Amino acid sequence: DTAVSQTPKYLVTQMGNDKSIKCEQNLGHDTMYWYKQDSKKFLKIMFSYNNKELIINETVPNRFSPKSPDKAHLNLHINSLELGDSAVYFCASSPQTLTGAEAFFGQGTRLTVV
Amino acid sequence: QQQVKQSPQSLIVQKGGISIINCAYENTAFDYFPWYQQFPGKGPALLIAIRPDVSEKKEGRFTISFNKSAKQFSLHIMDSQPGDSATYFCAASMGGATNKLIFGTGTLLAVQP
Image (cartoon, rainbow over all chains, first blue to last red; front, side):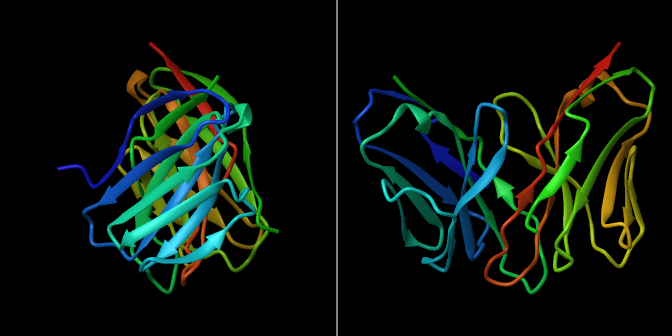
């Protein structure tokens, strides 16, 4: 019974292609995120959605477009893929609270652009 | 002001030893300081977390020490085991709509048998 699940786990594609990563959470959380982990394992937030509304866009190129059809799903679409987009992308969710709270992460999608 | 600095970058400890990882932050608005553990091919998973009104929190072999005035916190792993070998990330966040985690740069821990 996976809490945060994302698909696919691996994605290999050519430069210039468009690809999507899907994420679903069954925790009933209001907030979902996309994080990017680069080759040095540094984790950085890309987007945050709260109840289907975009809250944070951390200066991510507009080739990246998140979409939240409902509060349990947050998908990431990437246009015109570049070599530098190769990374592991993690979806996460957390409850909305007045103070900081735990985020639950998916298993990640390793994107390789060739 | 949003940075969280973490050291060391890597750590080798003998089985049974103590592993210590340190972090420092700048933004005093942070009110939640978690440590995440990540195994290869997996997502980060919460290990232990602390809030700034507490100076220490212990869960089993894992302890967070928190120094609010110095804006520093650390993770201590007692009786380190080979199964503890993983990458550890400290993080900080504040609540509300922007409950994003600001991560440290990670520490690769190797516990030798």
